[in-house]
Image 1 (cartoon, rainbow, N blue to C red):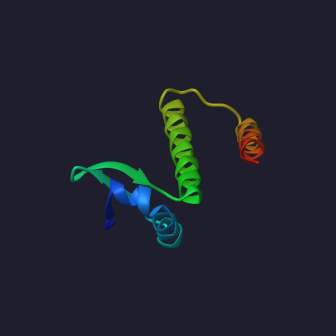
Image 2 (cartoon, one colour; image 1 turned 90 degrees about the vertical axis):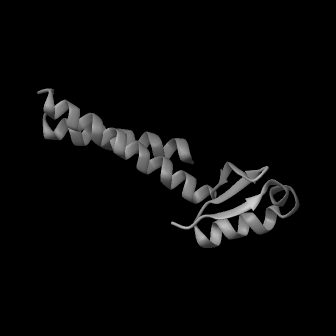
Image 3 (cartoon, rainbow, N blue to C red; image 1 turned 45 degrees about the horizontal axis):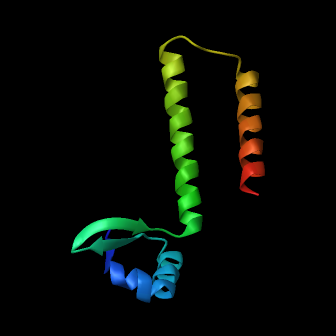
Length: 94
């Protein structure tokens, strides 16, 4: 992944351009302060997707730990819990 790097003044003076670039390329823009990376700007859609993917990875890691430590439940209960979690997440995002 190649990063687009911009000085902090661009965030203040060229915000619309940076916002458009994030949405079109779906890549982050790195904002620098005194020549050093300081902040990453990311489109809201990509941020939400990244958060959802991270939550899924955490859930899978917890499930793997449960399997390795013998903490198993029925398949039906697992699917019911997953559905409930997805419905709650959907309601929260609306």
